Length: 325
Image (tube, rainbow, N blue to C red; front, side, top):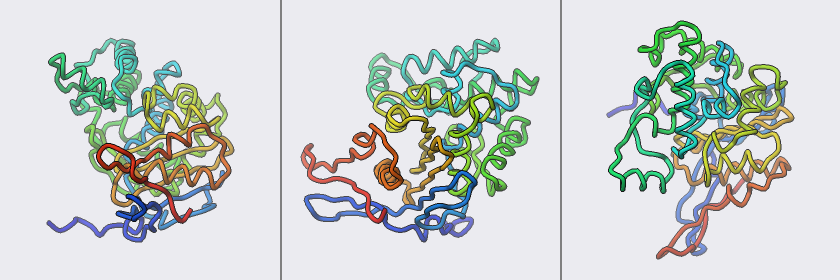
């Protein structure tokens, strides 16, 4: 089958930024495009094409949450962080989703995100051993979907059609993403959870995150950024690199995304966004760590971000490591 459109330069012209070493032999490489933006949105550093659009996937969630706050969603910080999350499906995540829904008189039956098992491996195994099955609340996007339902309730918008691209909620989300990125949405499609996903450039994504991280806490942007950095466990979960990054790096706002996207805002207003061209997740945190180190960012999370062993017979025999940064 022929593609509907040519692959963008952000993929086809991406430089090699990670090696996969097995026993001292480079077995594979990962190409990626990366940008660092200044507080005014200008490009400070770049590897590859950073102007072509990508789907940020779940890295869009904080921008979507901002749209909901602007539209009147009012949640305590830990639940606002959950609205930005690709959560692991742990008990406190599920309790938080139920709390968001219960606050507007709904329950998990109202969720329309794709049923799944918990993201966390141990929790997924526990559910299966207990005879459980995939549900919408287990799926990692249920916090966002619960918040979308609560936003619809606050505005008197239709509940049943909240995922439709023409719904007032989704229109507001697209407008907010364009506003924060400083560019129009280039394309839209259906994300894995069933909600719309909007395409912007890596430059736009990085600038948007820099604005979240540096905003006045009293503003909607600052509320979202503060909620995430104050409650990183709700954005991901134990053992997740995005949670370790925010917990170990003062004032940072970060969100990982499917197909190997990462977006980070620094408290000084700079932003970072990257996309691994092949969508492989193993190089994503490794490349980000190299960029953060090159910027002189102090963090206790580097050991987690850079832990990418290559195994042979269950033992480490090599690693994934960044090059060219």
